[in-house]
Image 1 (tube, rainbow, N blue to C red):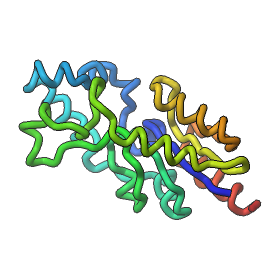
Image 2: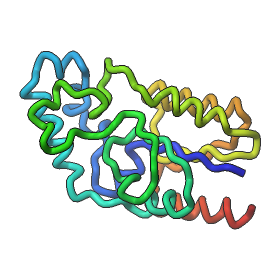
Image 3: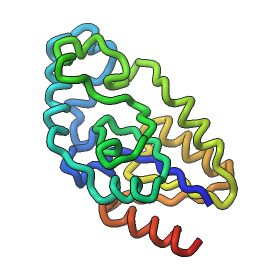
Image 4: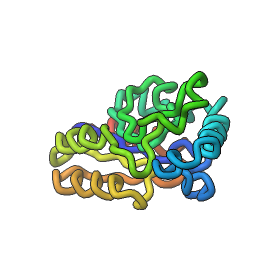
Length: 185
């Protein structure tokens, strides 16, 4: 049995990072067209995002996925999976480095904006296509608000994988689910 994790904002919420659903004022500015026409305002939004994430620490959900060596596809740009020791496939890139903040509006994949190509989407589909009947697609803190989120679930289901959703209290439930799955194997 193979486990593949797919994570979204809900996994990092307990690390005190607000979700984009909670911040529509930020979400509405994460468009390539906005970055291209409002350089200063866009850079300020990215500075705010980065400030929200500075000092954030991985919670036990991030740590458990790392400890159990679960491959991860993430929609998050917060870098917490990497801080926990996982090599996650970041669908939406990351944030600019400190010395890139003045040109944030011109960067691609830092983060991937609405209207940008998402170079890691194909890799994510390829990872999910390796699932087989009896494998687990562990979905942690992902809404159904993005096409990729819906698509990856559908592919996993079509491949015969069992989909386990953890939408609440990821910091406590991820380890519990992994222990149950791996101790009953």
